[in-house]
Image (cartoon, rainbow, N blue to C red):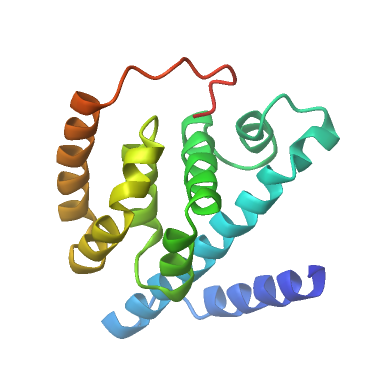
Length: 166
């Protein structure tokens, strides 16, 4: 795995040496590569978190480990962990993300909306993902804000999160 990451880093360096994208197609291609890498990061973070690998360094949580060890704010780290846990918890969403049917942005939006409403999300997951496939992230965010408002109206108040990570 380390070799593959070194090769990836070398490839990114080679692309960076080319300078700014010379065409809209190159820019779109760069964003597509970034999207794929972000999806892999989310999936790998989910496994790393599930296995509690962050405890090996004495960290108190996955969020605190990421905020300390990676160039992320605590809020960004919490978003990555929440999204990774969502992908771990919902196999259909994980498969859609892995296949590129939905973006990391869609998945992050769904994870935020499903926070404290996991069972309700599970009931609606197929429909939510169908909508995600059809809408851009901005439109999907609006739809999920409405979905969350409905979920809040129907679900009891959630218990406080002892780790503050979710």
